[in-house]
Length: 437
Image (cartoon, rainbow, N blue to C red; front, side, top):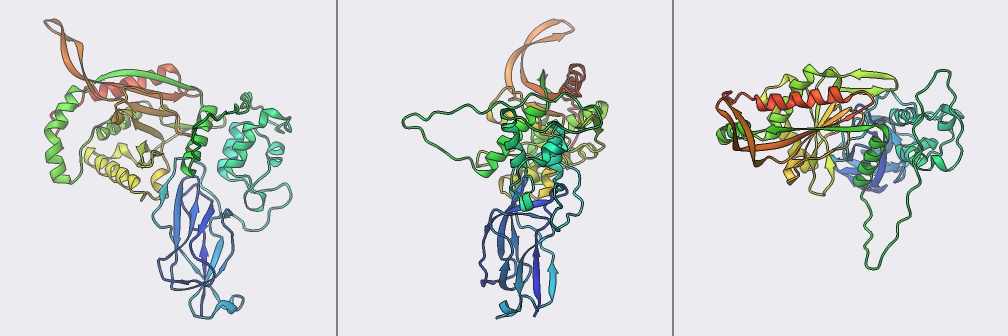
């Protein structure tokens, strides 16, 4: 009778650990193949782990709330009845399991691909730190001694993202050990002030944030604290594209089975502009700038719950408009159905958010770390505008839209940001309305 090891699955290239949020089966329960055993959560997605075999759950090795490294054994399943007593005798067979359909969470700052994680206890003062924690520590100028002094709530005292963000919130309230470094560092940012006290009035209702909303909140605060944000605006005459889409949308939907939206045109224009201004498609790593070879555009999608997720349309510059439309629509549909996979929300190099879908005419979105820029499109509205003609200026009714770029001023100056967003405007206004699709 074989004993199968249920391993913590790999949930994405930058995810090296996950938290057990809820056990769905108890020890001694009969389990059928594909039955969900446990719910797990990461900074990026929530998921269920299904059983790869029929059998009995004979041992759970971790409790709810424990954080477990990818590849570690979390439970044992016996394939024979009454084999509970054979836990120490039956030969173990590793079972590769894949996460079931995931519930999407906000995109978190990307990290380097994780190396294999040792399951041996860490030596004193040599705790394991995830790439995400190291990235935050580097950005906040937290030296090794200071990092070693942060209490960790993870397995074996590991410092989690929540631990380091909580520490940053109270960093200015007590003296911390000075960072030890032999190389000059950039000036430290000002400590985050303590949160203001909040009063409760008669009739006020307290609504606890769900996990996804807490992650979004942490991610937004981290982004603003990391990047000096600047926003540039341009106004775009969308009339040619509106007329072109009206001519082709019905035949396109009939032929391809998907809707043709303005988002697909925006994605194409952004990718083309990046080829001319590649510095916008980059990230910051300490004092280095990483120019991204791939053009992977995150596409902000509002979920039925009111939360937000950013699936990534990969290699947009290598696709035609049909290919962009198919991938973008597939991601948006699976996002709203909570069927995104971890890789669907990783690897973004710049983000597009469509504020106009809710009637907003313009906005200043927050950068999705560790990217350097995010493009926002507002509502397309009919307005009277002045048009230049060979016979002189006239007033006409046009479909107008505001386009904005929020960017990281550490790398992108006003000139570059302005040139890039203006180039997107030119590409949209110069759209070839004779093109077929």
